[in-house]
Length: 382
Image 1 (tube, rainbow, N blue to C red):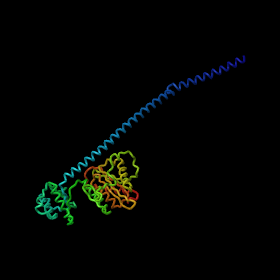
Image 2: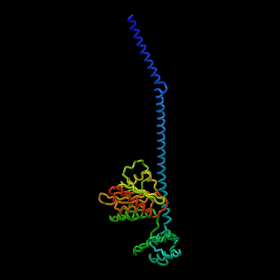
Image 3: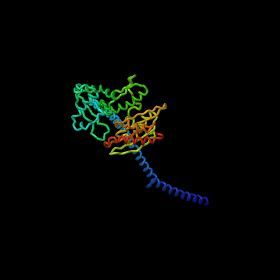
Image 4: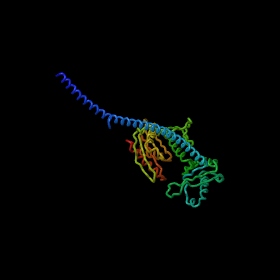
């Protein structure tokens, strides 16, 4: 009997434990399958994973689409730049052709009688040709002049007399006058006569005259023909060591600016904005690389003009310098002169101008002032 009782007790305990296990299983089942249970949460996580995968796929597709659009935009900008450069060259050529028979006379006193009676100007020019260029009366009378006029409006505050543009009917008459210009130089006359040229070519020639002087100091013979400097001995053409201005392709490349660039003061005048940047350079290669990097700074590529000038000293003590106007004729040369006068060395300065309206010569003062402020931010720049 005692054995049977023991077995019954054991069975009773087993049933109690089994009932407990059943309740635990029920609780686990409820935890897994019930509301807000593991299964529901897993299904929710799966839904989130599916949504995330969809979003990632959509982002990847959008990124690929954006990359395609950027490549197309880049190709279009490069093509547009090429067309713009071609059109600019054609415009300069047309300007040159339209001025082919023209001369500019500078330094000729502007008398009151000339302003009162415009018909007096032809007589003034005729007397100039006879007295200063030593032409015979008959030769001066035979010149066929289409137009002649003072350039610009009269301003009593003007330091120098307004230049005179003389337009001949044909190139022969113009060449006759230009062949006698040496007489003025021999007389050391204050009057100057030159072939009229587009501003772009005229500024390029002024830049080449400076380069020519540097070669002359080294006893290297050169000659200027049009907008080119030619080495007399080899007949080769001078190439700027910095190269042409950076192309759109070079600027668009998404490399970060790695050089330390300093910002100068910014100025605004009648809708015009001037901003300057500078960086240290010690070679032509660095100058070009630095121009590209500054052109990648936000906002700079959108400027109407990005004028730059540079000066650096090579290991042998030679000073190398140069500039570019970027269409702001004369600004680069004046900026370089400002750096030279302030003994700035081993520096590249870029001044950006956003055009607002005409402000005359003040623009040069603003470019020089903002440019020098950027140069002075460089360590031991002056």
